[in-house]
Length: 323
Image 1 (cartoon, rainbow, N blue to C red):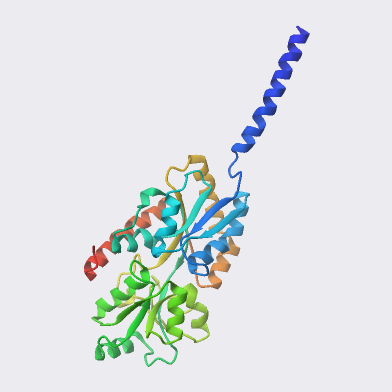
Image 2 (cartoon, one colour; image 1 turned 90 degrees about the vertical axis):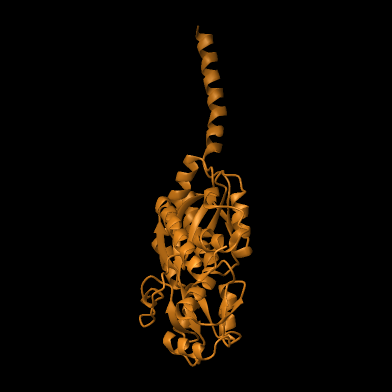
């Protein structure tokens, strides 16, 4: 009997030795997580993600590897994300516009929101209609009067079809019956440089890109897409004040994963996103470049997207831009 007991004990010990490593391997995350950023380096989405990375990595207890995959208004990177294995080891920093403005404006978006798991919204970047500081227009009304006297003579910079900057300008032109030529650029940084170099007369500049130049009077703000006046630009009106609905006209950055994520992994990632997006140090860093920290939990973030999509559909229909 004693010998049998010793054998049984050995079996239990050996079994425990084999089970323990397997359980440890199942802990998430057990290896680095890849973060796809569907935008160029240095832009608002990339900057926000890199500001969140240390806090998000700390909350997850493992490293993150950021990979920029720009192209086609963000569809290249987001398509790569949607096609990834839903195991939690590939996530991405997406923006609302790809599921609203881009989806309405373009026919070749190879995915829908149902192809993703939304882990939470993190930050908002509003746009500013900006001109050179020595431009002859000090207010939006000055610009409107000037353009009406010179139809087709002025140009504006945008980030191209399917972007909030282009749609914001189209809404503005429609509201005031203005004729201005669209000159598309690859992103917010490039269109800002075009305004500074006077290659174009104006443009919808991401506030995160232009905030420092606005403070230093290298750019002049005429109107913003913010829902309320920005504390840093108290004299600058909003599109809402001018009678233009601004829902869906601001970039809202969120963290996404492929659909089909296991429930326990989903919970871990969503909680880590919440911690990072509400980290005071992250909020301060975002504010330093003009990004508004606007965390929303997954269900609220999804509801926002559904509402914004309907608003953008209505706006593009009004503008005659529906596919």
